[in-house]
Amino acid sequence: MELTKLNGDEPMVFVIVGRVWEEEEGGPDDAITVNIVLSAADDDSAVRRALEALAGEGYAEAELDQIGTLDGEPDDPAFEEAYQDALDGNVAVITFRD
Image 1 (tube, rainbow, N blue to C red):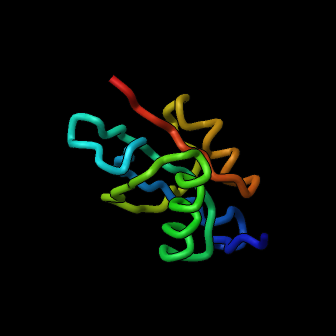
Image 2 (image 1 turned 90 degrees about the horizontal axis):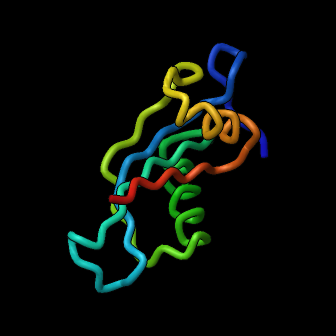
């Protein structure tokens, strides 16, 4: 996969924030908050890759709330590995469970 690069340096790395459910009929209390970090050519490609990754992880439903790009490596250590995975062409799904 060829990655689009900003300023010829780093690929475009997106972060998508949303919620997923393990069951199709899950209610609001069953939602799992996710952050998805991945590289893609544009917003549409990023959303498509994110949804494919979530389906591959076995999630039945997803609601994606926000999308943005990262300008560089995150300061938060929790996201450093996910950022590197994205640079390597992988999709990192970070879940936040209660």
